[in-house]
Image (cartoon, rainbow, N blue to C red):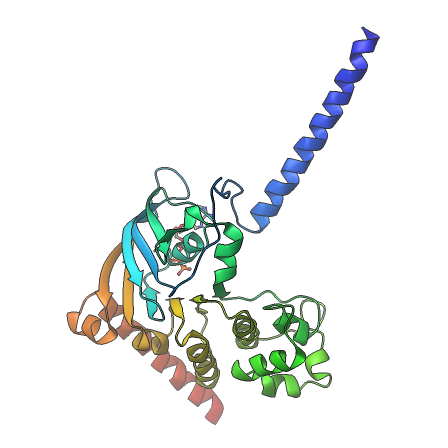
Length: 306
Ligand code: ATP
């Protein structure tokens, strides 16, 4: 009996080790907000980008059963064009970008890039083809140069500087005593939301992905910062297939198409002018936002003249 107890114990030990390992992996995916069940299909091939067209075909998706988030969404982003997605909070805007990255699989319908289903290509090739400028960029506890270079580790110093210039962040960097070598992040210099976003833009310029997702900050930026960021974004999205989760008027106005999401459906779609003329949900969102922006601007001027 003793002879048997030892191997059983040993198996128990191995089992616990494996369980622990799995738990760690699960926790890691939790942290990244990624589900581990998305895996490459056995015959996955690298994504081949030809022009960079993105297509959602009748996509249905829910995170939990019985709570549909996208209820059959179809739209196309022609190569090099910009589609803005707008809609109330919780409408499913960010979900669209997570699905494009294939952090989750759709329940029905499909997502295609240049005709290739995202479920049929390697995740590595998919994710390296898409650039993301998030609302809130995480900075590493390292130099500002490193944080920009993260977009393409092999980039030269000259390329890092060029990207910073295009992202309109050089004035800020050059104003720092240590310039590009200044330490940033939690333990270093804290950057404002607008500065962090420009670091993210510089990273994306270095990465130069054929497809771009911009998740605009909801928080109000002052007009000057907004203009600076806008011109940097215009530059990075020019001739690139771009999906923008839009909160700013300036981006939506210039989008090739605006998709208005509401409760998991496309409520309206069209250009800014067409949607305004329609006088529906978009027109009322626009009116409310314009009033809010004007009120903020009046408040700011009042504070400045105080
Ligand atoms: P906002 O403008 O507020 O960022 P959104 O339109 O981007 O909103 P999503 O982030 O796409 O909305 O979320 C859509 C819905 O899905 C929300 O009701 C949200 O609570 C839910 N949701 C988001 N992520 C998860 C998740 N990981 N698990 C379960 N439900 C989720």
